[in-house]
Image 1 (tube, one colour):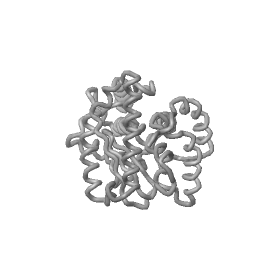
Image 2 (cartoon, one colour; image 1 turned 45 degrees about the vertical axis):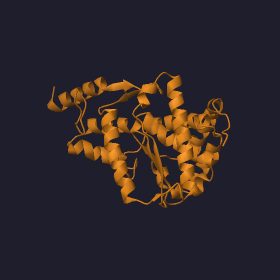
Image 3 (cartoon, helix red, strand yellow; image 1 turned 120 degrees about the horizontal axis):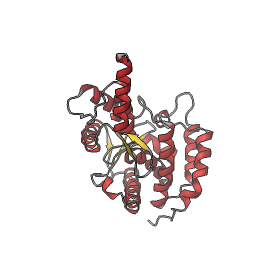
Image 4 (cartoon, helix red, strand yellow; image 1 turned 45 degrees about the horizontal axis):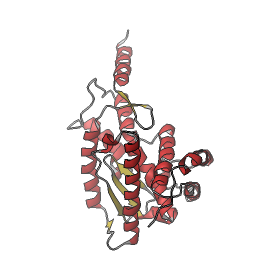
Length: 269
């Protein structure tokens, strides 16, 4: 066996040993970095981002207040969903934060641990609370379903960073560079290492359920993604860079709607 072949075999074996089954989606995922390490690194990155950008005060802005209100309802719904599935412990370290940032970018994202940002440029397209709930449900699903950890682990394997005991971020420059390529807002989260079709499908699926559980009509998702697609033009909104909106996706969302509607009870303000 050649050295290259041996390395490949070791990589495959190590990756297989590092797989874990997601308790909600039921899918096996590669996991080479601990959730606690990711949350610690994400908190540092989140604080730095907020310090370098214009955060809109919820005390002075109805839009910022709406972001917090919708976000907290989604977080409550997700917590309830995990409790019902007997997996509440998985979210025990989540400390939710929802901030609106003044930026023309059409984007929103969620880091591990529940650190969420919505850009003001997204609001003219969401238009209402229910559509914002669909976006937040989608983005938060990426975090709680471990999608970025999975992408980071896959990239580590590709760069030969896999180890039987996992990879500690610490001062591992190569691992931190991969982390920044996925999580750092300055690197445009999700653009350098975009989500897979499977991950996008999961985020659409459970995002609709979480929005519905929070009391928002999931049916608005169809018109929202149609507006996102129409806003694309020659330069798609940043949110579409890793979240392609096309006829197939909208068709899939329509197929998911009957299930999501089972969770829907209108919110009472």
